[in-house]
Image (tube, rainbow, N blue to C red; front, side, top):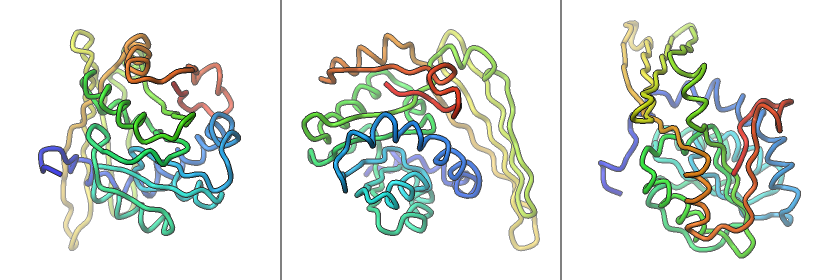
Length: 242
């Protein structure tokens, strides 16, 4: 895979995902996945975890007896994923460009991974790749923050945490005209008794519901259901699916 297609910028955040975000998100989204996907799958179904991060969701699915393949474009994320879900297969690849045979009963992408695809034509490529990897009547579940979320409390919000040997903070901003959000991250980590500072910026795109639906239909998806996290999944508070 060409170097320019690699998201090495996510490597510096991989430890934080592994120790904090990953376990929390996988635990909270699992009930939604069980409701919307798992109850319709055969035993030992083959599931593709797209933008799999540090592999915590793959670990939970693996423990339930499913065959799991994960794709992520951060080598460091995949290093943790292989430790967390030792019986799953992980592939270093890009959601926009991967090509797999039609062997999956379901594809799942959580934690707003697809918002990091910032061009509509590239999101269309993601959907096409997913469609081609699914068996007949396969299921695709993903969460995606729409532009309304980025325009509201997300804009100019901050997050952070402090641990014994590292601390991190991020600030989020959104350009209404460009429909592009910036996540500016600063990490301080203790290395060889010295503190090292790392700065990085992630970009995200706020899509409209209409754009997403049209893209799904264009590549061939049939029955499409949209869920609102605040109303349909109030108990979990997690993202919905399209």
